[in-house]
Amino acid sequence: MLWQNPIDAKVFNDPIHGHIEMHPLLVRIIDTPQFQRLRFIKQLGGAYFVYPGASHNRFEHSIGVAHLAGQLVKALRDRQPELQINHRDILCVQIAGLCHDLGHGPFSHVFDGNVIPQTRKDKWKHEDASLAMFDHLIDTNGLKVVLLSYGMKLPEDVNFIKELIRGRPTEVDDGSEVCSMATGRCYREKGFLYEIVANKRTGIDVDKWDYFARDCHHLGIRNNFDFERFLKFARVCKVGNMKHICTRDKEAGDLYNMFHTRYTLHRRAYQHRVVNIIESMITEALVLADPHIQIVGKNKRICKISESIDDMEAYTKLTDNIFEQILNSSNPELQKAREILNNIICRKLYKWIGETQPAPGTKIKPEETEKLAGEMAAAGPSTHQLCAKDLIVNVVRMDYGMKEKNPIDEMWFYRKTDPNKAIKIPKGQVSQMLPGIFTEQLIQVSCKKTDDQSVQAAQKLFVQWCINRNFTKPRDGDIDDIDTTIV
Image 1 (cartoon, rainbow, N blue to C red):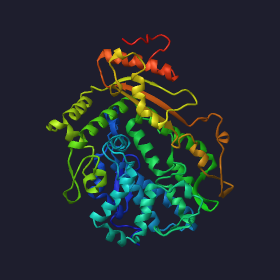
Image 2: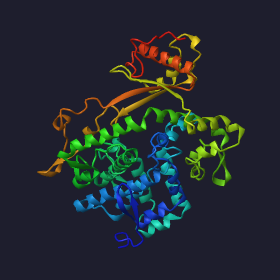
Image 3: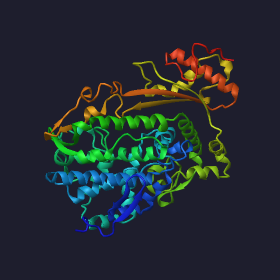
Image 4: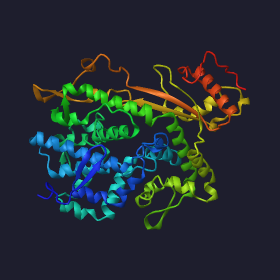
């Protein structure tokens, strides 16, 4: 059949996965303006200004995720025919992997994590835009007919793809919802398919496998996780009323390596102190430019940057190119934003002050974060002439992807002697040297004023603030010896 041996399949030569074959339906999706837009969105946002090799984009990552999604679902189909995985399931999972990042904005997580929260009051995540952009992609490119020609059912399969992108909430994992009328799938029989692209239960999914391998390759950081082994040992076992993807008991240590790789990438790259400073500057520039950038959307509607997320025609035009658009603009209203971006280009960055952590057993609550800069500015006498707007206090959470929880505690395994019985592997049975705490907070402080006097004043304020709050001793200053008198 055509879906089994697609004569129009294309081969992509990927630096991570080698030569990979793409089904012609996926190729049709790739060859749309909405997907091609991902060529112009950096995978690691501002990290490219720190790591010269981190020039890869969401485009190649999405193709890699689609490839791995296909590898995993086909491995399960071939290993366990009783699962009744059909060609529609395979295509839906691959398309979900391909389109899961359609909603990313300029500089990836800088946009949904920083820019939108500062320009809009409503909560929004890039996954929301991925679903809207997927609908827009299907409608504007006339792909419903193409989907039908490859044996897909509408609207069930489109709804299923969107559910796979969002990830199935863990609260319905007990099988209480037996069947979805919207997707035509029985949750009890095929709920494991939700664990391939966006696994809300354990965080172990092909999205992570690709960006771990791809980001490590481009950053020059060692990747300690071998997803090829997971593919060899993955199988589906029944747990209560549901079916979950499991792996061999002996692979538990490799999964800990996977999450340690995630921690390493965050510590060394994603939350690198200079990366966070640059991304703060990009955020500030985009927020300043927001009212003055006009993007034409549906029915010639004019949108601001922050309004484009409500109009997929406008959002399609919003990429990292907004950086150069502001930088090269002669609009006087963009002068301040232009100066900030020019300072990034010329390496005139905000000054790093230091890093600390809350005392053991305590943490900074989300509602406290906006007050920290003002609290630090008030830690010394007013003669220092620094105020809250001159300081950037960035609270970074480092974890294994599930806050305080150990994600491996949610994973099911099986033994060689009984491959159909799902079991748990306690941490103590894996190794006595594994972490006991799975989350921590880092508090990074920088100063917008870059003259020596202001930087010295900020450093003294920072140390005094750490003393006042009983934070850990900053690595960049000696609390015992430093003169905390603010000049």
